[in-house]
Image (cartoon, rainbow, N blue to C red; front, side, top):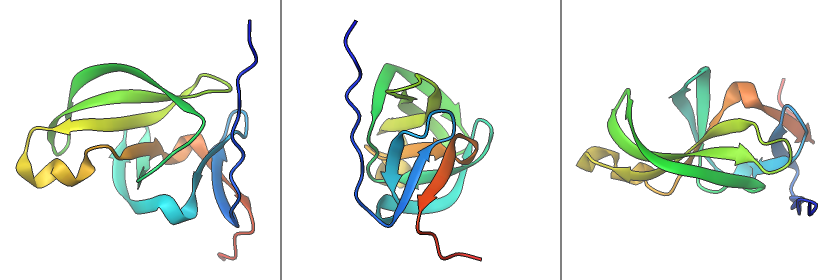
Length: 115
């Protein structure tokens, strides 16, 4: 069995997996904190790292039906969110090829100067 290659992000503010602390995203790649996931609030990112994609499925979400793929942490294999593959409604097309990461599945690492 081969060892999983892990990418370490270089940034002041990084989001990590709560389970294994693998780097998942840079704060600079955050688009919005105003999303709903399966387990509460979720964040929309333009890019994530150290994840693998599950199979594509059509899922009924709050904003309509979308084709999505779950994203799993490459290190611990926990589902941390999903990737929007296709939006059926024109108003939702901006989500295509973006990533939802559940707030409950991420932690902040490095230099956060927030109160």
